[in-house]
Image (cartoon, rainbow, N blue to C red; front, side, top):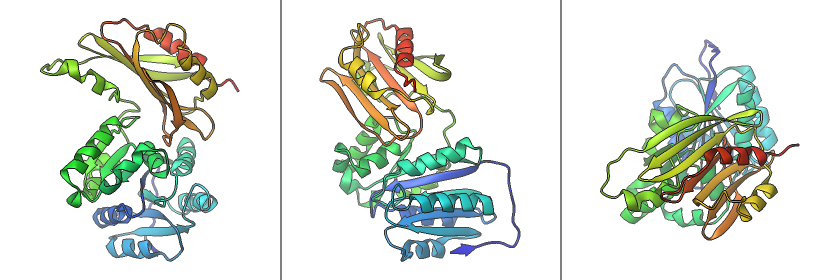
Length: 354
């Protein structure tokens, strides 16, 4: 379903792409319709819809809302990561060859894992064609409990860097609070959180982050007890760290006698999952002696990312839908000195060599 203007314009700028993910019925199509209804008239946008069938009902809905130039393409099959993967790649490459749109919006099916979609977009990004601006996760207030276990909706949550509570007009105060807690405890931390689908119209929600990594520690709630009644600003020290041939950004966060450090590493780095788990399980020598908590999401294979969590209860690992960079956050116990350079070396030693 296409509506093209007479004049074709091209641009050398990277094409911004937004992925809008979430469960069936969460309001993804409603969000897309609002975006198309408010887009600049002179801009040509393309929407890729993944539907379970080829009926194209959502495409008709979007067409009735759109203004100006647009193209809506439907990929049936229920999941872009498997049944529709080849069609998605073909459609995306056709779009990029035929005409450069001002923006591309992608809606994976509510039963689909977004990982393969993001991987394909990252490969095109590396080729200098487009930019993955943001992955926006919509959350149904009535389904907050499903995120406690791993599954498709958990993958959708993990892969998103922007999180929005959908159907906010019918959400209870308890559900709003539960959503806020979910957003605050998500790892990696969400860079932008909104209430209501209209939040998706925010420029910040659609645009790429200003920096590759900003230290918004998911470990910080453990510090709150000692911070109550204080207005002290944290001390931040940023460092550039070589991890093999790659360069990582590390930020040391200090407040009220306690330190934490966060590392952000290029997604090209791949770590050895078995070696990491074994090292953390055994305590990585004396490194964990002064550590209260550790949390990380690291790329552990070509298409595999693993969430690591170390606390007093031990080491846990699980698959993760995050597909952007590798991140690690380590928090020291109160009053303890932590050798962060040793942690730099530890990360370097955990890389996969082949």
